[in-house]
Each structure stands twice: as C-alpha cells, then as structure tokens.
Amino acid sequence: MFILNILDYSPIDEGATAHEALLHTTELAKRAEELGYHRFWVAEHHHVLSVASSSPEMLMMHLATSTKLIRIGSGGVMLPHYSPYKVAENFRMLEALHPNRIDLGLGRSPSYQIVNRALNETKGKRLSYEQQVQDLYQFLSDQPSENHRFNGLIATPVIETTPEIWMLGSSLGSAQIAAENGAAYAFAHFGKPSSAGVEAIAHYRKQFKPSQFLEKPKVMIAVFAIIAETAEKAEALAKAFDLWLLFVESSTPPPYYPSIQTAIKRGISSSEKEKVMQNRKRMIIGTAEQVKEKIMRTADQYQADEVTIIPNFYGANNRMEGIALLAKAFGLQR
Image 1: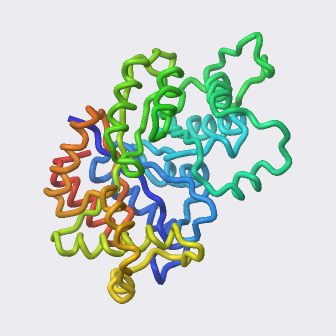
Image 2: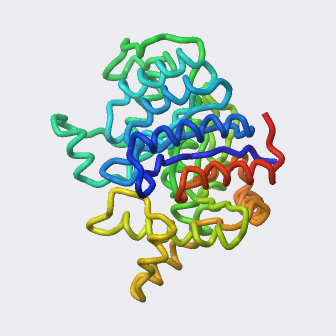
C-alpha cells in the first residue's frame, strides 16, 4: 500500500483574503496531521493572484512550528530562480529546527518568464538546471569536490540530519536527473496524465544510482483530487475548478478562486468546452470511495510508493471535509 500526502496551493477563495488563505492552509495542515497523512507540502506560485503561496520556505517554517509530527515540504522550490547555496541554507535551517520532518521538493519552474527575470535581474551567467542540482547536493552533503568552483564553502548551519530530497517533474528529462542524483522522484500526473509518465518512471527506476541521501528509487505521483460527501457536490466543486483553470490561463485572471455560485452563473462557453474536457483528464472527482478507487488504480499504473493529493477546490470547509472523507476511506490513522 502506498503512503498518502497532501499538497496545498493556499487558494484565495472568492470573498477571502491572502491572510485568510494562509490561515486556512495552517488549519488544513493541522487537520492533515490529525487524520494521519504523511506529508503536507506547499507550492511556489508567482504572479498568480488567486494563490497565496509564493514563498514555500517561509510558509513551511510556520507550518512546521504549527504541527508536531507530519512532514512539511515544498512542492516545490523552483531552483532556476535561486542560488543553490541559499536554498541549501534555507532548508538546513528548517531541518535544524525541525529535524527529520523537512522535505525539499525541487522543480525546474513553469513560472512566467518575467518572474524569472525579476528574480535574477542582477545575475550574470545562468547555470544549467543540472548544474544547480549538483551544486545543491554538494552543499547539502558536506562532501565538496576539489574541482568545484566553491570548494571549501560550507552551507550552515551544519546539522546531523538532512532534508529529504525529491525531484519534481513530468518528463523523461526530470526522471533522468532524479535517477542520476539518487533522489526520490515526484511525477506531476495532474499536469500530464499520459503513458509518457509511466515510461518516465520506468526509466527512473532503471537508471537510478544510489546516493548518500537515498539507497533505492522512490516514486510519488501527484493528482488533483476533488472529494465531497456526494457525487453531485463533487461535480459542483469540479465546475468551479474548471473555471479557475480557465481563469489562470487567461490574460486577465481575477485575484480569487471562483465559488460554485460564480461557476454556475458564468457557465462555460462553447469555445471553452474542449479545454475543460482536456483539463478534466487531470482530475479525480467524486465521493471518497470513488476517489479512493481511482487513486488506487492510478497508483498501481505507476507502481507508486506514495500518492500526493492536491485538494485545490473551492472553500476551506470543503477542503477540510474532503481530506477527512478520504482519510476515512483509506483507513488512515495517526
């Protein structure tokens, strides 16, 4: 049986504020811990006005302090935006204060180009993603290479434990990087649900090289999950999610996550229907038992060790209810 986790985007529900969204994330993390979920990750999204989680490290510190047992992680830190040395020190600080509870999920960054330019405005030569990953591993391993350009540089604080490292991706390229570096691999099924994902994970397992951080391959898949007490309510929440996805990809997205009422009132145009149908392939929708069955089938398809649900649907109370219903269906317990 696989491990079950949560990734939260901190959505700003219609009528709510970013402050309230972050408080909702905190309460969701506490509830996830009570229910028996293994990990609670937070996202990094820039220039998405309907999402409050732009700085996962800072939110992680707050969540780790607000909980006691559940692992807290990033899903993920977008490495091309940053210095690997700074990322190493941020996560060592987190791990120093909350040993054996911190996950470092790394991504290549799907953000807007203007975001990357703003975050790197004063930098000169850009490093390749592969080089950044290697640098980060060196700073976290305390085993510097004599040939490295920063040989002798130590990421502080020096601690006895290490954050658990996960490479995030949805392609053969990301699978290869994870395998070469001996990292756990989290596949974004919610982004590209296709046979290519199964092939990427098979490639990862075959090419995996043990590292000081991980002895054997470990696979997680992440899925959008909309869970409600009835199938009818789940479908209503899914319609609001349909609209949010359309909003996010539009030129003038509103600064909130649309409600069920807004989704009903606005509806979907004929030109949007095909996009909505494509997006529906990225979701698992239904009652807890229906979602459980679909998750188990998907996990078996990938031979996943862990499944991370993204309960990115409208309403803090709906999200709290959804994760509780699913925990009960899976028989989770702390």
